[in-house]
Each structure stands twice: as C-alpha cells, then as structure tokens.
Length: 495
View 1 (cartoon, rainbow, N blue to C red):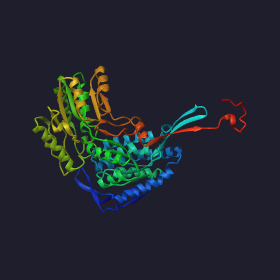
View 2: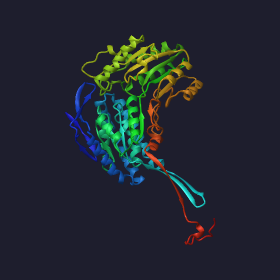
View 3: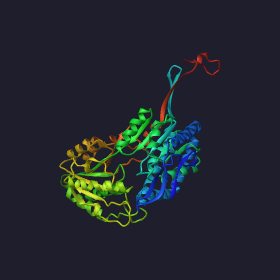
C-alpha cells in the first residue's frame, strides 16, 4: 500500500497521530494508497518551519524570487503529464480535464512571475514642504491554504505562487482524498530551488484544519469548498484574528433565450454540466429555458448526452470519469429520485446505466420541469445532474437567479446584444458568461462569487490575490530644510 506523508521543511515527515485515511482509484473502487492524517503537533511543526523560513525569505530580492518562480513554472509545465496522471488516478477525471487543470494552474504561476511589477508602490514627492510620502506592500508572514478534492492541483496554484512571490511562507493542507498531485507539485517547488520551509504540506482532516485556524502564527487562510464549511472557516479564522478568503458553494444558472443558437447552447450545457463529472463549483447545474426554446434545446441536449462516453479517465475515449467516492456517488444519485418524487420529469436517468467493476460511476442525468421549491434545485448536488427550469420571460429568469442565495457564476446564451448587456449589468453573480458557459477568469483577473459563494472581502488569484497576501504600509518622511544643510549642494538653495 502506497504511503503518503507530510512534506515539512523540505523533508518527508511521518504523521505523529498514527491516524491514516484511504485513497482510492475511483475508476476501479480499489484502495491504492494510505494518507497520513496530521496531529496538532504535526501542524505546529509545519508552521514553525514556515515561520523560521519567513525571517529570511521576506528579505530575498524580488529578482531572486522571480527567477525561482520561473524555474518552478518550467518544471510544472515539463511534468504536466505526470501531474495529470496523478489527478486522474485519485480524482477520476479524464486526462484531458486533468491537463486542462494543469494549464489553468500554470497561468497563476506565470502571473506571479510578474511580481516585480505587482509589488511596486507609489511615491509622492514634496507632499508638504520637505515632506515625502510613499507606500509599499509587505508580506503577512505564515499563510495557509485548505484546498478541495475537485481541483487538487489547480486550486493550490491559485494561491501558492502569489503568496510566496510576495514574500510569505506557506502551509498547504490539501484534500486527503487525492493528495498525490499537490504533494508532487510541492516536490517540484523544492526542485526549483526554493529554500526549505517556504512551502510545506500537511495532510489531514478537521484536526489539521482547526489547528491552522487557531494557530497564532498563521496570519491568513485561503479556502475553497462547500458553503457550510466556508462559513465555519471564515467565522473561526476571523475570530482568531486572521485574514480569511473562503470560496463557497454554487448553483450556477445558464439562461437560454429563444433567439439563441440551439446547437451552441446544447454543446455548452453538456460540457459545462458534465465535465469533470459535475464536480466543480463552476459547473452549470440549472438550465433556465425562456419561452419556447425549452423543447428543441432539451432534444439537442439529450442527443448529445447519448453520445457522451463515460469511463475510466485513463481511457482516451472517455469524456467523463467517475465521482470521487462511492458515498458521494450514491448521494448524487439520490437527488434524481428526489426530483422525480417531487414531480419533475427525468428525461435521462443516469442511474439506469450499468458499468463493469466497482468504480464510482454515475452516468449523466437530465431532469425537466424542475421548480425552485425542489431539493434538486435548492441544493448543491456537485455531480452530473442537470436540471431544467422553464420560465416565460427574461425577467423571470433574472429574478430566479437574484432570489438564489448563491452567486458564483452564471451565463446567458443569446444573439441579442441588448439582452446580453442588460444581463451582465443586472445579474447578481461574481462571474458572468455571455455565450460562454463556464466564465472562469484568466490568471490576470480574479476568481470569486457573490453572496453565499464567497466569505471575505477579496477574491482569489490575480490582482486580488496579491492584495490578500500583502498589507499596505505608508511612510511619511521629513528631511532637513535644504537651507540649513551643511552640505554644499552646488546650486542656490530655495524654499
């Protein structure tokens, strides 16, 4: 059985707790590894290593930090296929999705390579007579990331590059369900030449999370996960005096107007709802059909679903892999039954598809005539289930989104520029797509939702990421009046 341990101060450290957790291959259902679960003492060791490294790392020149970040970027790119293989082996997503995850992570490393520009301050000369004012951004100290199972490589790379390039040191607590990819990325980080202790990994569960939230030397916490946990992370972390950015759950709506290109909208709905088995916070889970577009759109979506190849992520023919665990698969499947019992129409029932072996597979499902009172609409299912809600007008569609307590991402499909412009201005969501189903920002913008999809004041990566991992300092200085200087300036002194 493969053992997965912590990586602290540049060396492998076995857990002091004696507790372990299973790691599975979701495509077969077989346990392939055992991950060490951290004790409070393990977390203390990691934080102490990061704190010791911070005293030196914060004073390393920006030029040196940039050079190391470029080296890290090149190693991640060169080892992209290995990272993707580890993702598929423990998460289950198909290799094309896994490689896409690596690519999006690279964007954030590349952004951090520009840290020399990003950290430039401002200067005001002679703000008052003989008084100059300038501002700088300085690192916080030890920061931590608590990252989810669904993007075990990309989400750590949302925060690690900016945080470390800005001069902080970092403790990563990845998901214990698929820890090998993030562990390998940290190994590449050390191979790039970063000093020991700058980036550390502790695997664990709630014990590790709570210790990070309460540790007095941890200055900031970044989290991505479900809304209840995000709220807990935010409340606990801020109560302990920490900065916290906590990205939470979602129920993303895709509005299709009657004038939309049906083929384009159907392709988008299938890829956005069922890519990565629907286990992503930006997945489209509600298809809002306006007017008479519902029937032709549902027909087009159904045709495409029938051709979707579900199978082992290592098979290049597979377009969707399994879910992360057997328990999660069963929970998602139960929502299909709940929808039917509440009066919705199950157009495509993924539960009826049989698969060989014991993998955690569930074929995609499409449910029509869903209403906003049903649990299949209200809950974040986080699986390959697409609900269709029929409305009469654009106004009804907009109101439905505004009434939903989440506000992560949304999209509209239309040929009408006026409708698109109105939607992007009026809709309450942090990320909006116009004829784009999954509007994840590029690395030089920032990622985050509104309402119950975000706890905290800053979103992740990009400019907001640099802002989160630094704090401003303004220096006001007065120098002696040139008229009283004892130094011969070589020119007449004036006031």
